[in-house]
Image 1 (cartoon, rainbow, N blue to C red):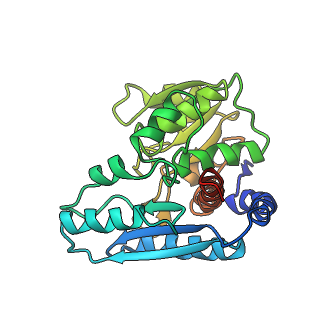
Image 2: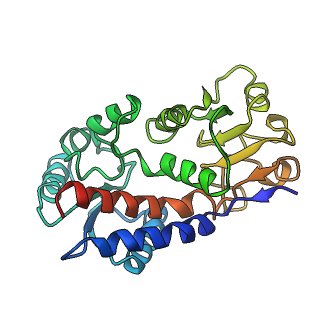
Image 3: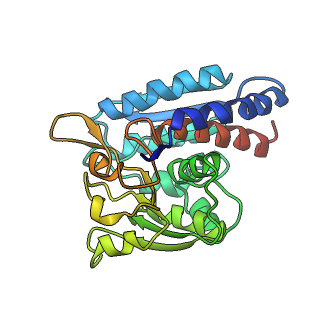
Length: 280
């Protein structure tokens, strides 16, 4: 039976370090501004978990809820207002935005020192060049989880099924920096199963339920599932066919309860880092 890599255990392991960093900062609590357009249930669920986690760490969360029907001009103005607020140390924009809005101006104008989820071109460039910056929280959560469970990336062959700028590509850069050999593949890769079978670590981030099945893994595979989908039964599931894959592999993350449970701790880590960079 595979070792189940649970995110809650990783978050608990990070908590004391984060609390120590918070205590080392003098004065008011660092503040994260969360911009949400509309009220999608997945956004609300993440927001609730984020707020609860930040409260336990002594960090402030400011929720900025914008109506789903907001126009591009008004959205850009609201974003610029929050981005320019000296009382805000970090800005998190829930994406994707509703149809009719785009985040391009927000990506281009966000203060790189407040960009705690790594969406600005400045931080993207830093991640891709191997320099210190803010990487997106989900890729960072993957590396935190593997490190917690004693999985070294050095010398490992990694297959990342997914090529988005939010997960797949920045994760590849983080793993290359840790001396892994990385193959970025996707749903149009010829013989995806064979590519994944040849890897020590398989990361599923394609955004399609069941894309990683039993033909993609071996008994030595370590599988990290980043996907969040709704299955035919209406329940949350990942990109991995968990029921078929778990009996085969050596280690695997569940969905829910895996990588997603680590992202809020990574976000808190980035907020504390941002506050320090801003001179707190």
